[in-house]
Image (cartoon, rainbow, N blue to C red; front, side, top):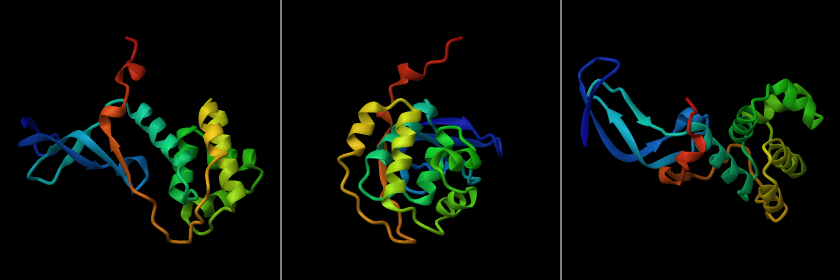
Length: 168
């Protein structure tokens, strides 16, 4: 464990390795395991997350392969990871913008065929042909309205740091 000055109160806080509830992704079910976490007595806490883009790519791949239908938050995560506005996403899927909004808010659950379309669309846009092949083998479990997402416990050491090095 090491020390660091808190960016909020400037007092000394502690850095330790542990599990971190990664809500910054927009998902409520992602836990990063083995990540460095800063904690201060003032209540400030955050994780040192390497290669966020690589992390989001790997989380997306987990979502694409899961048997549960995608939740609204998961659909929003995939859309945002593709860098698409809801209007453009809706247009590409052949639905109305309000429909995407209702999915993402959890007001309605898209049919399994649309869920598959979203997964294939993401895989196509992100050049993930191997994932697309895996999607065809999924045996879907129907999602009910209000059903919680399955937890994602992600070991941070799975991130390939060399793949997200910034060229200076």
